[in-house]
Length: 381
Image 1: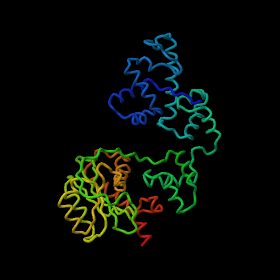
Image 2: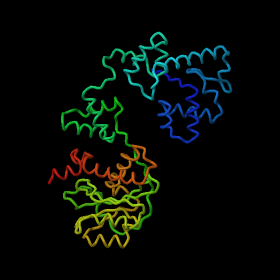
Image 3: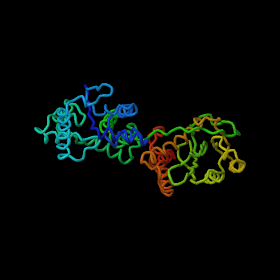
Image 4: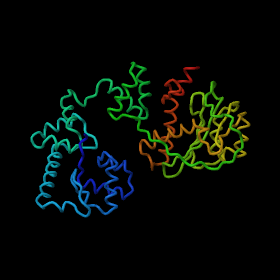
């Protein structure tokens, strides 16, 4: 049975105050070291129902309606409070870097240091761990130290900013040595090195005008370069003003072969991107039914290059899934991952440029045999 965790009244009140300020539950949990979001929801429900007296109830004790610790004698209240405060003071004097997760070796050393000053039961309760786990860690030699394989996996995860899951980490490891993907998965789960990229939120589609048929028909496989291209525009709302990225991807190897960043979503945005293609290109260019793609100026330039146009069905972004996926990865692996929500415009632009370079030259893809787009193109040539 898992040991219950008792949080001080100050933590509970701070959590309620942060909740009143509309701070995300995940942020509250990380800042205050709370392990379960249900705990915050319970405290918030008590606050909303006017049952704030329940915030001070001990573990395993349920106060009746309208009654709190006043039911205890003043002496018992003081004894309980004094006992808990003494444990906290003794702990903080010994170790002042307690975070949301404590290193196992540090925890064992701290427990041995405090031996005699507080019981193992009280010590484990303060850190929210079971006694069996504590004793198991204490019996394990070299607890908390990374093995040689774990150190290599950690280095790869850090080098890629925790953007890769265990499959891609395994592919990179297998370039030097053969390791099972299950082994890599266990190591990453054990050390909390899993992919930290957030899921992109879906946005509602507009009502574009339909002009060309869907010739691509979700056939995203291309056997030759520049034969099947996809393009789209995405918002970059991460600086002092909104920016827009127009990009073109070659489905042959998933490489971004043209892109433009501007602060206006007009025809010039897509024309500048289109201009980066070769003067004559007899391939297929697929887009959505946005107004810039159905404009006369854009259509004319596409025809001059000898390109055949294809358009997604109305309100069906999955028809252009490859470029949509790239834009989602760009935001998730940079702005969302690093918390870049209000940065200078120059930094936003440079972040996009750096990521596209990284995406083309270094970011491996499973469908390419765990090679980057440029690496795949060079290996085939």
